[in-house]
Length: 289
Image (tube, rainbow, N blue to C red):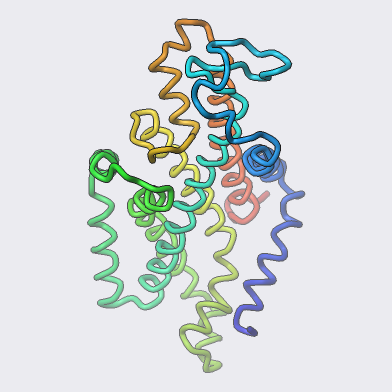
């Protein structure tokens, strides 16, 4: 447990930094609002409201349906709530899996060096040059019975190389610092140095990489869902845009179908980008005043 104490202290300091940077605070506020919408909303809105044919079609916003209904007879507030939950859940699952693999490979590659670094860098480069978007589209079409975890895994497979390259470069820089050399002279092992000396200094950077990974996963999910390649039986923000486009919501002037969904997607990207920028401004020495 003593080995993880510096990491736990680093995590404990993070909440205090939220109030030091306006961008970081604004980003977390936006994401908390969206997480509240997707996490608490389903507890107050029955899932039956997202079923087709439950209500009259193409109804504008009213006290009974705050965001109106769509051409399939669904309550669009319920669709927005459940779609936000699913999209953020997919983004988080893909981001967590991608960041775990990327950080682990980046740490090993950057710290060990030698033949290990060469093999891992070559493997990472192979994944980097693959045509990611066409492959995801083909695999999504081939795996027709996609579940949410499998869909998130598919997105994570192509997201870890970028994190690996970033983490590797930071580890190579940090392992040459004087405090790491001092730890080696004091007799600490490689694993102990990685957890006690290097990892605490990497937490803000890993947090920024995680925000980028989640944002990229949500963007990829929205794009695939817009093409009709989302998991079967789910409600996502991208799939809602797919239906809106297919049923001509823009031509019908049904702004209540398009605008809230687009605002939620913009909120996700804006919130995560502000978090990324805020962490960069706080911990990047070049940006400090």
